[in-house]
Length: 277
Length: 282
Image (tube, rainbow over all chains, first blue to last red; front, side, top):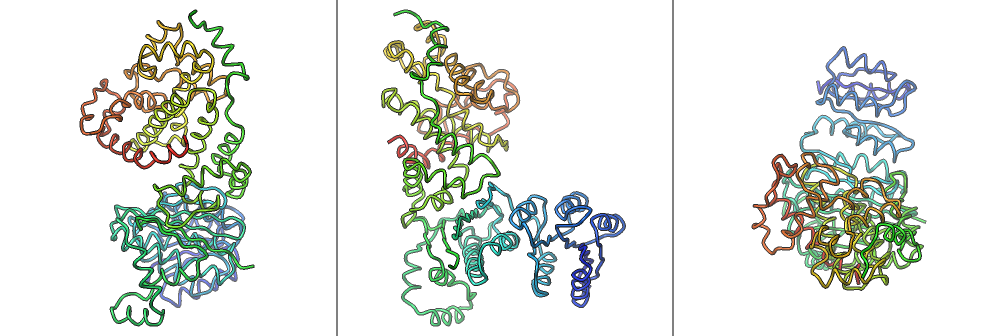
């Protein structure tokens, strides 16, 4: 058994589909069709994880997240919503929710989110919102992959709202790659350090800044090497060195981003992606 | 030369042909940046409508401090590079410089701005070190605390000249100012804050920043500004290590903080923004 998980969803069809899928993957499932039913279940039973819809007739998932985190800080919680995602995502982070799942989602997304919840180490996955204005967000996260994955679940909701699918994946990949670089090579996995991530969405452009606290690296040399070598050759070389294939992410991002600017120190990167037509 | 009467000061401060108002564009931009409901679209559009403001923000985003390898050429990109907090601080600093530019001597304005930015940064850093959030009001209060000096320069240039002849107007103290010209910059600062419609807490800082630290047991914005002003001579020294012996009244809020940490953090921040400040002043 993978743990006890409560699904809070007032739409019966969705709830049943989720419950069936998760049961068949080894989770013990409890179902609640409303905010108050969820509270009653939480009072009665030890629940390890909650996945809750944001919009319910008798309360919101964000309110539920606040209650859960106050009463049972060790319980993991993911929110799911499909409308007003930008506001919900920011409120969700502030409420202490761990992850965000954008509706509609596929079974594989649900399983991945639940898996991420199960594996999350909250002490190493802190997200602080340094500033938030519609279209302009500044986050400070613990220097860990957990924090990055957590943040990306909320960012995905915001980005899916403004980008077409192809462009969304370009941006998702870029944040994932350069965020991991900041955690891994910049801050050397030191969870006392932080990574700052800012995002600006205006008209048809998404601008992202990622900054770590490390000493930086020689971007010019890396880019020159990467640009001089064809991608398949690079991939082969990295595989031979047992490095993760995404390690050459800068090269890929250099091709997909409309602008990619590093600072001289090599510990800050600015990327800009224009949406399609 | 006749001493400055309260009546004359009050009239001078209210005379909008004499004293500047805060530039409307800067105020509007600042209001937008401070409002959590303002979108990046609104902020960028407003800034883009003011070419001199756009130019200044781009200059700073392209400065050596940020060290970007390629040119930042759009206001949105500049905003993301600078961040909300720095953008807000820059707008305030630009506003003050623009307000007094051309009305007082450039050297005086440069000294005043340098000193004001130093105190504003110190307020911001001390609040961070103490774990307090004043939502940027501490920066505003630090930046404006000494604007009474500027007002005296505009209203009564002869009196300001006398103060300058008798020493450094920024450090001579209110009693000496009173004795020499019949008024002090704290009184004038309070009048200016009222004329500008600044929040009460900022007006209080402009009026009380030279008072004793004795009553500052808890961290408040006026207490923070007093402490930052008190630290200014230490901040100007080369080695912050010397400053660990700054005497503090018993029970002062800063007794629980590490002065070395504060001074190093302020100096680091000043090194970072020194160039930015020069860019703005130029």
